[in-house]
Image 1 (tube, rainbow, N blue to C red):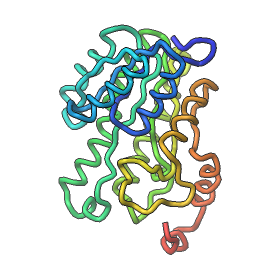
Image 2: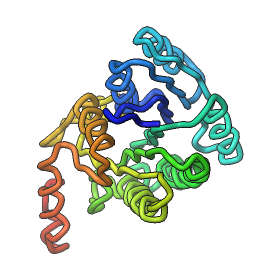
Image 3: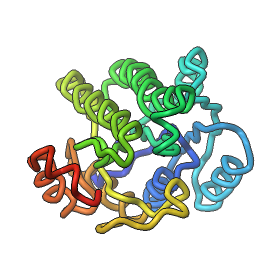
Length: 251
C-alpha cells in the first residue's frame, strides 16, 4: 500500500516505455523498495527501460501489452497482479498519429480510436475490478488538454482524448468509497518521443515536470491536475470562446 509519506510499494506502467511513465517510475524509484511492472510490447525499448529501473534498485517484472489486441487485455492485467497488489497503476500508452491522415484514412482513424480510447476503457474496467478487490490503489490516467476543447488541427486525436478523459473522471466517481482513487492528469504539449519533430507549443513541459506534478498529486490525493498549472486557466478561457472566433485562433 501507499505509505504515510506517499510512497507506493508497487507501480504498474501500462505503456511501460512512455517517457512520462518512466519519469514517474524514476521519481518513485529514488525513494527505495519499489516493484515495477512494465506492461508494453516486447522489444529493445522495454528491455532498456527494465534495465534502467533495475539499475535504480527496482524489482522489475515485464508483461506483454498490445493495446489493439483486446482479447489479450485480461491476461495482461492478470499477469500484472500475479506477484501481489498494485498500489499505483499508470495508464500511459497512446498514439498521436498524423492529424490530416486520421480524418481521411479510416484505418488510421480506427487505430487512434482503439489505442487512445477503446483500449484504455477496456483496461480501465479490468484494472478497477482488481483494485476494488484489494480495496486500495490509485489509477493515474495520463490525459491531455487536447481533449478539453477539440481543435480542427488534430480533432481525431483530440476526440479520443476527450473520451479517455471523460471515462476516467467518471470512473473516479464510480469508485468513490471503495478505497480506490483515480487521478486524471492533463498535460499540455510535452517534449517527448511522441512529439519529436513538432514545434513546441507555449507552456510546453518535459516528462520530468509532468512526473513531478503527478507524484505530488497522488500524495495529495488529488483527482485532476493540469501540467503546467497555468494551462488550467488557458483551457478555461478557450472552452468559452465562441465557435466562429475559435476557428480563427492559431491553435
